[in-house]
Length: 328
Image 1 (spheres, rainbow, N blue to C red):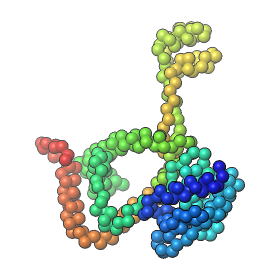
Image 2 (image 1 turned 90 degrees about the vertical axis):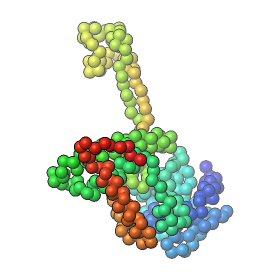
Image 3 (image 1 turned 180 degrees about the vertical axis):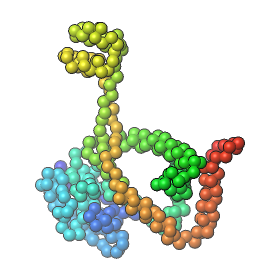
């Protein structure tokens, strides 16, 4: 593929971006937006400073050549000073992918799914806060209750907790685990349709990769016994079809495992890595936002929180002789 073709594809990807889409440079983590997509250059504007910078086609072509010369994977630390916006924009191309953990920009054979883009709505933080809606998921409600319970009781000192508090924690943990597992399965099914190679694909908090597992189950007992007898294994040696005995028999015959096993291969996505530091940073940021909120409706918000706490108190406290109603 010539760079002219790649350039046209990159321009098309840039033109399809929302006007308020924000990109992040992989090295300095500087936010910027695209303000102009032209035949020979792409103009960007840095969010914090408001400064504009044209990114010329020739410089993108040079970067693409350096990636090819490096065997398809380029170390971002080798970029000239202030050149990482080129890498961020080039990652919009479906054949280029940034691995922010490894610090590389890679040319791939298949379309990539991870790009350093965040979408914004152009709204103020207060407006965005008002637009947030509570998802209708059991795991969400259970997690709210669990968070409240963890804030009320020190999980690092379980021996000091009273028995009812431990029961509440255990119940909520079980519910979260079960419901999160169901949601995790749904997410995995969607990821299987999007992750098409065995290389890790990265998100903000971690990465996943496609892999496969093999499940074996013995065929019908009579069929297995017949196959083994035909191969010279006497029936009395097996007595009953047992996986360990069958495997021992396979070791001394020319039979393959498919002669006695139903072998099924399934594709799945497994967790490859977790960025605990980034998770901690994000959580701390959420806490700081709440602590520093200047929302003029703070008093109303506090009243809502008080009402929620009262509901949580009623839901998490079990009193003998009372009826448990359904959650609205």
